[in-house]
Length: 205
Image (cartoon, rainbow, N blue to C red):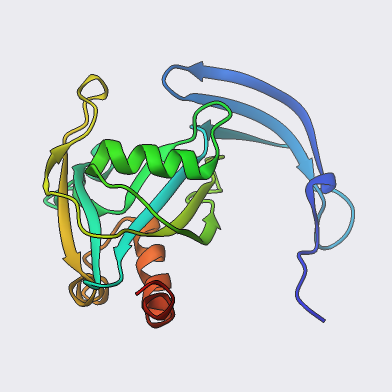
């Protein structure tokens, strides 16, 4: 039989949910119980959960040139010692009210890379840090017909300073193998492309 998780949403009791901080994002303090693998219910626990909304990430791929469009930008959370806080990433953005994933992907591709997407293929749905953050990220690969220009893009009123790169697929895979892609969303998307690139090129070329 196929694998199924032991418990579901009905196996959690939320006794209290309070907003303890609210700004650009929010933090909730939840008092809850959940079922135990050994039977019965665990004792109530208190957990803070970072609420930042859901996001969509897209990896634009030109199958004819076998080349990716990727962006480089500063990430304050990556300030750790002497490591560079600039990251090479796929294109991504937060889901606004009533937006579909496709609308988010197309909007962000234009804003971050002046890039027009064609066919979109789902990659995966992931929780980057489910131990303390509610964010769900839905990842896609999108066909592009020709590479956009390089240069600096992003919305100035949001403080974005985004540099566009054209990265040949074999070079991207070499960076992945050398542990040069510390961004989790991008790492997942590149690993998926490593598996599916031949099929995509046959379908899209």
